Image (cartoon, rainbow, N blue to C red; front, side, top):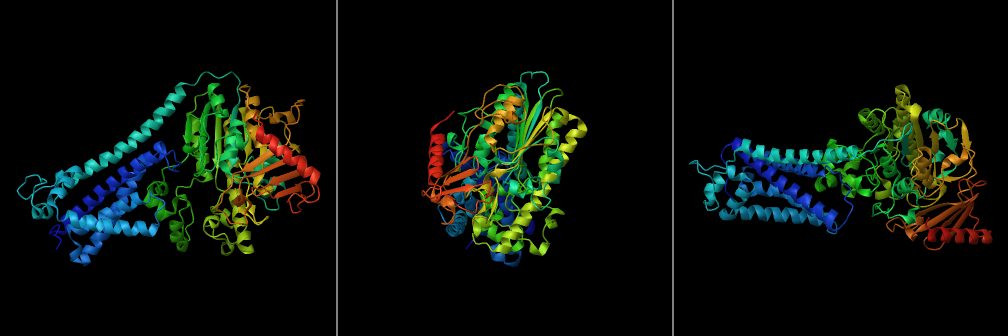
Length: 638
């Protein structure tokens, strides 16, 4: 029979909570060890904040306390649960489950059963092994426990004495646990501040008159859904207002239909296949970035990003930025930093957690950073920039990415609440879509764009009011578009059709003519060369400066536009990307697409902008010419 852990309710509660906190700390330290192995030994992408060092242990402690409170409540009703056996069982269960969740091949049901069984047996053994229990008491700082006669407990103390007198000094224990968590927090924050401080001290003096540069990326915003480009809904009134003061590119194209490779192209000037950046690999340091070039030229550099999947510190695009803000320390982000918290809360698009949340109609991503927060963080950083020093800032706005959840009053801008879709990552849970669901999702997407547009407009208004905008080149674009069944495909990263590649591109600033629209097609990979040119940094980047379209330059035409995407086999069989790597080229009016299974498509985008009529069967000579062009681009690196 299990030994009673105490006789008074106060002692019962204290003992259970001390065990819960102790096991939570052990789970947190264990998680950090596992993450370290994955990151530095296995070179895996973790999708975690650098603050995971303190967030994970804090969350694991909190989850342990929750388990302890459940036992306390149950123990008041069922006194048989008020034993050392059950106290250890309830404290150990979330800790063991947290660690097992890091082993992905094992099914979630198996992890739950294994954690429950091992925890129960662990509690059973500890309640009967005085020597082991005594050592664990000492190792986990429970040496603060006292025996009735005032002597410290030891490994050799009888079981009854240890179990019945397990009376931890709560204040001293909490002081140790709190100090450990505080040390992890202060150490992490201090290290990040020190790294930024060192970067700031390394800045050289900038050339006199160097303009500021603000690169704004509207994540997942396609040109076809902007009123700036003729869309029927008023999704971008602020962008229209500001674009009238600069140059609008009517046919700008991304280099890939998803985030990381296009950002990598923007920063380096290289095509996707020339870079390491891909689904499971970050951008390496083989090629310089425009941020590194500007930092060497004396610019204050900062990246403030909201995409939690592919623009964080793990993916290499932060190189050259002295200040980098990705994840923020919200309750949701802290909770999702633990493997167990992530599983419960649908962090990293965990399917089990998402299904648990769906009945509650709570679809938001843990720790999501809305556009108004990005705007505020930029303003806070700009206030700290040394007066007279030019800055280069990259902002990524994520609100138009799934799940589409525009805040009030935008949530009802284009659809009544009853018409709103269920934005719970259908692309990762249920690939079946009805026409009504597609229409509802598109209305939410458009409303999300309108929200971002308002924040970007307000940000530029703030810069103008402060006088900063007079010396700032602003480039507004997107990393890729989005699809709503125009070709039977939803979201992005699944094809190379124009809705996934055609993005907005606007350039505003000193020396930029107002009210100019550029018709020739351009690639966003030219952004690095353009910034290099407009700042007179002369670092030299692949591609061609976009300034040739308004400066009267006789620079030759940059040639065809290229895009590609690596295959993803977990997509539905009818999704193009499921058939392997895809490649496309836009040469003049013709868009050529080659799938991994060899199927060819070609469209006349002037006559057929939505790419409805496949011309590959009727214009074989042109198709063959474009195929050779794709092969030539893939073989030649500038």
